[in-house]
Length: 384
Image 1: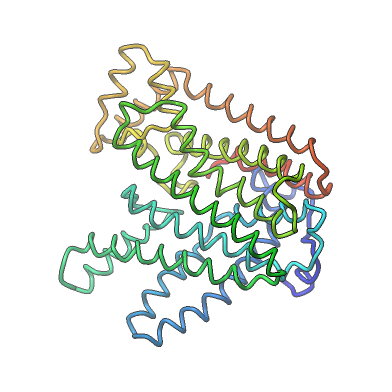
Image 2: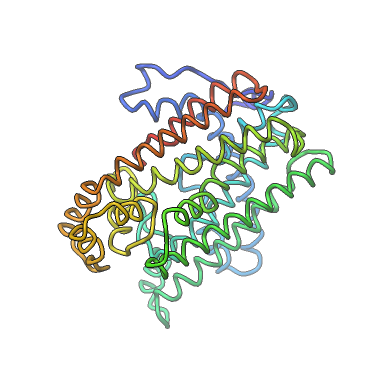
């Protein structure tokens, strides 16, 4: 990004149009996030270069470890969390300062996100992420190729956990680079800490659900979506942005952001549930059908069991972790035949409507309102 693009408080906002290609979701995201994504990426790269060099001084092996962590952060992604945080900041009356003063805080959310992704992949035993081997798989492969002693899989998982931990520390360190009055930075930190606690709570419930699926429910699956995804993807980043602008917790804007963020965040996870079964792996970067193989109690699968006939329920309960692609495809048809897909799609639509209604309940900068309106649809109507 050119220096003048981040000198003021605003980023370029261009309307999406036919020239943006055939994907309307990508067009909307490009219109509202291109400059921000570049700014965040540059901030992360500069920060991580210094951090990797510092760790390399401890031991030569630490350089390779730190570089792997850096690559996990810079590997790509939509930068959804900094985007919502930015528009939460811009939408507030105090979101008029120079972007560089708060850019480290936005970038810190990507380090927090990497922490969550790397450790989530270990917990889920996921093989790919964004079309590439997950961190623990890549590390295990490297261990085996080097001929080192011990179990490569165990080594890969252990080092991936450490990478996640390091990214959490890096997030804290980068957040401290934001140029804010001390009292405001303390308020921002409280919001950030609450986001982290809720993320871990949601992740624990997700793990618990997989081990106790028989006693799970649609309500508890929605609770997982609320805390594992909605909180740290949309709701808390918006409130984080508002805190950066100096908005208090009892302000009407806080209530509007909370309502909008919860609705869009839940819809975002419901969309993920659909993509986990019906998405194209070439687009999502993850294999389709893993939720079906493991019986993960997502809202989609909980609804399918609730709506299923006895024959359909028997099929839903019969798939194993070693099922082939043909069996998974047949079970995906069963899920759709129960009506669960249609129900989830209506839930997504209802939540988007709720989010847009929430935007009308408070005074929000009109450019930010336009961006958040587009992002509510783009984040929940996507192919990856």
